[in-house]
Image (cartoon, rainbow, N blue to C red; front, side):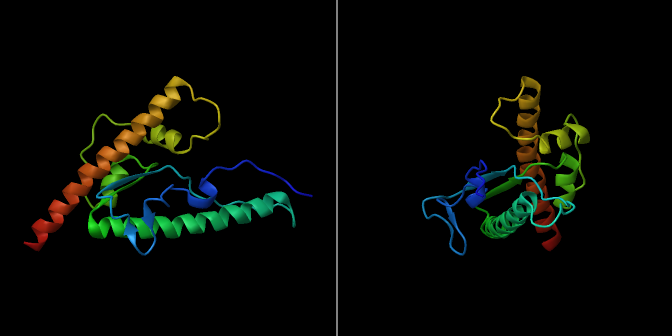
Length: 165
Protein backbone atom coordinates (compact mmCIF):
# COMPACT_ATOMS: atom_id res chain seq x y z
CA UNK A 1 0.00 0.00 0.00
CA UNK A 2 1.36 3.44 -0.94
CA UNK A 3 0.47 6.60 0.98
CA UNK A 4 0.98 10.11 -0.34
CA UNK A 5 1.47 12.89 2.12
CA UNK A 6 1.66 16.56 1.19
CA UNK A 7 5.05 18.16 1.61
CA UNK A 8 6.90 21.26 0.57
CA UNK A 9 10.50 22.04 -0.27
CA UNK A 10 11.35 21.71 3.41
CA UNK A 11 11.70 17.97 2.97
CA UNK A 12 14.84 18.59 0.90
CA UNK A 13 16.11 22.01 1.97
CA UNK A 14 14.17 23.45 4.89
CA UNK A 15 15.99 26.78 4.82
CA UNK A 16 15.70 27.19 1.04
CA UNK A 17 19.38 27.99 0.62
CA UNK A 18 20.57 25.48 -1.97
CA UNK A 19 20.88 28.07 -4.74
CA UNK A 20 22.68 30.60 -2.50
CA UNK A 21 24.85 28.59 -0.15
CA UNK A 22 26.85 25.39 -0.56
CA UNK A 23 28.17 23.37 2.36
CA UNK A 24 31.95 23.54 2.44
CA UNK A 25 32.11 26.44 -0.04
CA UNK A 26 29.94 29.08 1.61
CA UNK A 27 27.93 31.81 -0.07
CA UNK A 28 27.73 32.20 -3.82
CA UNK A 29 30.41 34.65 -5.02
CA UNK A 30 27.80 37.23 -6.00
CA UNK A 31 26.31 37.45 -2.48
CA UNK A 32 27.85 39.79 0.09
CA UNK A 33 25.35 39.36 2.92
CA UNK A 34 22.51 36.94 3.64
CA UNK A 35 19.66 37.04 6.14
CA UNK A 36 18.20 33.60 6.85
CA UNK A 37 14.80 33.53 8.53
CA UNK A 38 14.45 30.13 10.16
CA UNK A 39 10.94 29.24 11.32
CA UNK A 40 11.49 25.50 11.48
CA UNK A 41 10.12 23.78 14.53
CA UNK A 42 12.06 21.66 16.95
CA UNK A 43 11.61 17.92 17.01
CA UNK A 44 10.08 16.77 20.27
CA UNK A 45 9.94 13.52 22.19
CA UNK A 46 7.12 11.18 21.18
CA UNK A 47 6.19 7.74 22.40
CA UNK A 48 6.37 5.03 19.76
CA UNK A 49 3.00 3.85 18.45
CA UNK A 50 2.90 0.09 17.94
CA UNK A 51 5.46 -1.61 15.74
CA UNK A 52 5.36 -1.05 11.98
CA UNK A 53 2.90 1.83 11.77
CA UNK A 54 2.73 4.71 9.31
CA UNK A 55 3.16 7.09 12.26
CA UNK A 56 6.48 5.43 13.18
CA UNK A 57 7.74 5.60 9.58
CA UNK A 58 6.77 9.27 9.40
CA UNK A 59 8.59 9.86 12.69
CA UNK A 60 11.74 8.26 11.24
CA UNK A 61 11.52 10.61 8.26
CA UNK A 62 11.07 13.57 10.63
CA UNK A 63 14.16 12.55 12.62
CA UNK A 64 16.26 12.08 9.48
CA UNK A 65 15.09 15.39 8.04
CA UNK A 66 15.83 17.17 11.32
CA UNK A 67 19.37 15.77 11.37
CA UNK A 68 20.02 17.09 7.85
CA UNK A 69 18.54 20.45 8.84
CA UNK A 70 20.68 20.58 12.01
CA UNK A 71 23.90 19.85 10.11
CA UNK A 72 23.14 22.40 7.40
CA UNK A 73 22.10 25.15 9.82
CA UNK A 74 25.11 24.64 12.12
CA UNK A 75 27.48 24.83 9.15
CA UNK A 76 25.69 27.91 7.82
CA UNK A 77 25.74 29.58 11.24
CA UNK A 78 29.47 28.90 11.69
CA UNK A 79 30.21 30.32 8.24
CA UNK A 80 28.12 33.44 8.83
CA UNK A 81 29.72 34.00 12.24
CA UNK A 82 33.27 33.49 10.96
CA UNK A 83 32.96 35.67 7.87
CA UNK A 84 30.35 38.12 9.19
CA UNK A 85 28.40 37.82 5.97
CA UNK A 86 24.91 37.57 7.34
CA UNK A 87 22.42 36.74 10.05
CA UNK A 88 20.74 33.46 10.90
CA UNK A 89 17.48 34.35 12.62
CA UNK A 90 15.84 31.45 14.44
CA UNK A 91 12.38 32.39 15.64
CA UNK A 92 10.97 31.19 18.93
CA UNK A 93 13.02 32.98 21.56
CA UNK A 94 12.00 35.90 23.73
CA UNK A 95 14.19 39.00 23.48
CA UNK A 96 15.80 38.34 26.87
CA UNK A 97 16.73 34.80 25.73
CA UNK A 98 18.38 36.21 22.60
CA UNK A 99 20.37 38.63 24.77
CA UNK A 100 21.43 35.76 27.02
CA UNK A 101 22.61 33.76 23.97
CA UNK A 102 24.98 36.63 23.17
CA UNK A 103 26.13 36.95 26.79
CA UNK A 104 24.55 40.38 27.10
CA UNK A 105 22.45 41.67 29.99
CA UNK A 106 19.05 42.36 28.43
CA UNK A 107 17.53 45.82 28.58
CA UNK A 108 14.16 45.21 26.98
CA UNK A 109 10.89 47.05 27.18
CA UNK A 110 7.76 46.98 25.08
CA UNK A 111 8.18 43.57 23.51
CA UNK A 112 6.05 40.45 23.24
CA UNK A 113 5.49 38.43 26.39
CA UNK A 114 6.93 34.95 26.83
CA UNK A 115 3.45 33.55 26.15
CA UNK A 116 3.02 35.54 22.93
CA UNK A 117 6.51 34.48 21.79
CA UNK A 118 5.64 30.82 22.44
CA UNK A 119 2.34 31.23 20.56
CA UNK A 120 4.15 32.63 17.50
CA UNK A 121 6.84 29.93 17.72
CA UNK A 122 4.30 27.10 17.97
CA UNK A 123 1.85 28.44 15.38
CA UNK A 124 0.84 25.53 13.16
CA UNK A 125 1.27 26.31 9.48
CA UNK A 126 -1.50 25.34 7.09
CA UNK A 127 -2.70 26.40 3.67
CA UNK A 128 -5.33 28.60 5.36
CA UNK A 129 -4.86 32.32 5.83
CA UNK A 130 -4.18 33.17 9.48
CA UNK A 131 -6.49 35.61 11.23
CA UNK A 132 -5.28 39.21 11.48
CA UNK A 133 -4.28 38.88 15.17
CA UNK A 134 -2.15 35.78 14.53
CA UNK A 135 -0.52 37.31 11.45
CA UNK A 136 0.34 40.51 13.32
CA UNK A 137 1.75 38.54 16.26
CA UNK A 138 3.94 36.36 14.03
CA UNK A 139 5.12 39.41 12.07
CA UNK A 140 6.01 41.26 15.27
CA UNK A 141 7.86 38.23 16.63
CA UNK A 142 9.91 38.03 13.42
CA UNK A 143 10.68 41.75 13.66
CA UNK A 144 11.72 41.49 17.31
CA UNK A 145 13.91 38.46 16.57
CA UNK A 146 15.77 40.38 13.85
CA UNK A 147 15.99 43.56 15.94
CA UNK A 148 17.29 41.85 19.09
CA UNK A 149 19.69 39.58 17.21
CA UNK A 150 21.24 42.62 15.53
CA UNK A 151 21.21 44.77 18.67
CA UNK A 152 22.60 42.16 21.07
CA UNK A 153 24.97 40.73 18.48
CA UNK A 154 26.56 44.16 18.03
CA UNK A 155 26.69 44.69 21.81
CA UNK A 156 28.37 41.29 22.18
CA UNK A 157 30.98 42.17 19.55
CA UNK A 158 31.66 45.48 21.29
CA UNK A 159 32.03 43.76 24.68
CA UNK A 160 34.41 41.19 23.17
CA UNK A 161 36.59 43.81 21.48
CA UNK A 162 36.64 45.92 24.69
CA UNK A 163 37.79 42.90 26.74
CA UNK A 164 40.57 42.15 24.23
CA UNK A 165 41.88 45.74 24.27
